[in-house]
Image (tube, rainbow, N blue to C red; front, side, top):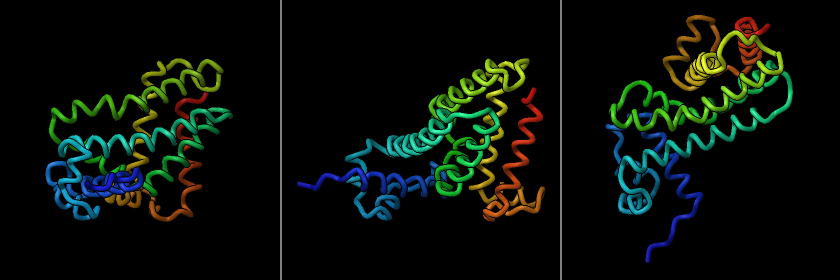
Length: 210
């Protein structure tokens, strides 16, 4: 009887899948290759994950769970709006550097894949962050920390767009090059983070501050 895989091994397999999906895209990613790189047979892979789509969804949910923990930690923190925004910017940059494959997999989804599958994924991917940011902004408006003439739903959408691009900037080669072209800053140079965060805070304060 085959030995049951540990949770650590399953996580390792999903991380291998995330790298493959990020590098090759959903259609081109090969489950045989993923299984080989993870040190298992494809039969074992499909014992735990129904099929390729099921495995992909498991990889995506693992990534979302990790990101959700980061966002909840920041969302539950104390402090003024800009202090919490600063904590969020720092967390996003750190997450994007440490889990670049996760962000590149997300970028692959947003960049175009099977339309039917993309439709299934949109609410699952965006639902969590939309709720966190709407609550975050509505609370700040109610406390008088930021302007209240912008609907919190719209402000959350624009704020999330900013954070999404920040994630891409610190994980995707195209956006890293784009940052360098605009600012001369290397996304891989941690010494430039403080200047970037300061500029982000000034930009957000200018847009949302009273």
